[in-house]
Length: 107
Image 1 (cartoon, rainbow, N blue to C red):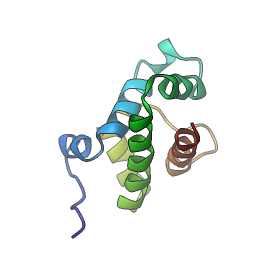
Image 2 (image 1 turned 90 degrees about the vertical axis):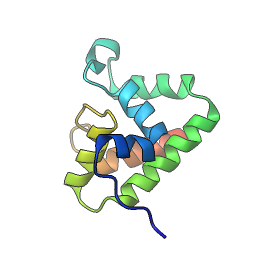
Image 3 (image 1 turned 30 degrees about the horizontal axis):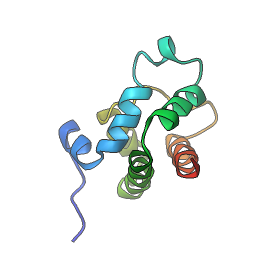
Image 4 (image 1 turned 180 degrees about the vertical axis):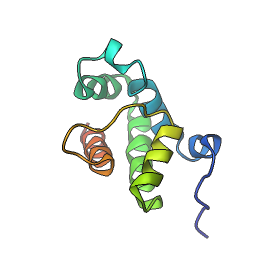
């Protein structure tokens, strides 16, 4: 039986804890004070996270983009787990998350 779509920040974080760690710890509101680019932040995550955490984060990104159908719901979900940045210019949030997933999976 499929899980119900989370409704609160707590539920999103319970369902996607590794993604919350990635987005909340590396792509938060103070991002620009710590990193020169999104790539630098992702490089640091890849270098610091253990392989199990990276695998879970990549899986959770895949689950999230399959779970939500609209771009608005995706923005709500990613904001709930700590994302406080817009995707790079010219990319949708869904495309950016997929590029992050591929990069993590390749590491």
